[in-house]
Every structure is written in structure tokens, then in C-alpha cells.
Amino acid sequence: GNSVTQMEGPVTLSEEAFLTINCTYTATGYPSLFWYVQYPGEGLQLLLKATKADDKGSNKGFEATYRKETTSFHLEKGSVQVSDSAVYFCALASGSARQLTFGSGTQLTVLP
Amino acid sequence: GAVVSQHPSRVICKSGTSVKIECRSLDFQATTMFWYRQFPKKSLMLMATSNEGSKATYEQGVEKDKFLINHASLTLSTLTVTSAHPEDSSFYICSARRTSGGIEQFFGPGTRLTVL
Image (cartoon, rainbow over all chains, first blue to last red; front, top):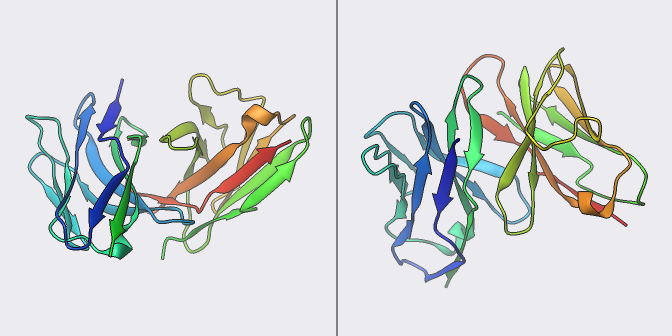
């Protein structure tokens, strides 16, 4: 079956630090890959996505590249802000219904 | 655009009672909606896929008679937790996919259920 493994949190960084949250996956076929963000008290929001190998998704300074050879989709940001504090979920969609399979989530706290 | 609401945002009920949670797509039509359960510090677990006008498809291990799903219109799906027990206490999240196409799911803010 499909699965997503992402680095355990929580992650605490100082403002302007570099962020990496690792994500690897196992899937049949050719999944689409996503990063979702959940700010405190809010629902999940799509942060970025990539639908095929070597695609790079980017949004709000965050980037992730779909690496088929390493089955990875690591999230990076060069300089985090306090407002980036949230829980980040890696996910994949596959199968005819394109259902989402989520990783366990990584809590990020950015300190001023 | 693509806003999904849930009602109520939190509910407390007594053991043995039933609770209904609504999920609405406010500015788009959604043939397919999904219901998830999120445990503390855990990922979202897909419970069922709800298709308008047909029976929901439940994931393995999810009791369909306990978690009743009705998707009667293109903008509304409901999840009813029947005969709730304390172990049903959780954060329930719905998402919706546009009828017009695309694989993206738009998520509601979630409903916190506490069963006493």
C-alpha cells in the first residue's frame, strides 16, 4: 500500500534560519505529491504540489522537488519567518480516486 | 474561492447519543468529499470517500453503521457518529474536490468531538 514518512518534530528554528523537512514515500504507480500546512486553529491548506518526477513545487518561499529515484519530496525554505510556525504535512495522491495519504505531520515553531 | 466549512466547530455529547457534523463547499460544487479523523500529534486518517447521490466508500476498519455518511447534494455531506463512545472523541476533518475537475482537495477547519 501507499505510505508517507516525514521527519519527526517538533522543529524549532530561529527567524531567518534554513528549513528542511524530510519526506519519503512508498506508492504504486505515479503519485502526485503535496505539502499541506495547518496553521493553529485552521484547516489544512495546500502549500505546494508536484505531479511528476523532477517537478519542483514552490509557494511563499517554500520549495520541494519530486525525486523519483530517491522517492522523496523534501520541503525547504531558505529563511523562515515567525509566521511560518505551523504543522506541515507531506501527502501523496494515487489510484483512480486520487485519495490522499498523509505523513504524520511536523510541528514547526519559529522564534523571533 | 474554494472554501469549505464545517459545523459545528466543536461539540460535546454524552455517551450513547448521536452527533451530526456538516461539511459544506461554499463557493463550488463538490461531487466527491472525504472524511478524515485526526488523532493528537498524529496524521489524518481517511475514513471514507463520499460521492454525491451514491453510497460512501469506507476505508478498512471503519464501521459504516457507526459513521453514517450522507452526501445528498453537490455542496453538502454529513457525518453522523451514532451511539458515540469516549473512544470516538477526536478531530474530524472533511475535504471536498471540485466537480469541475482537478485532484486538489480543499479542507474544512475541522470539528472537535468530545464524548463524555
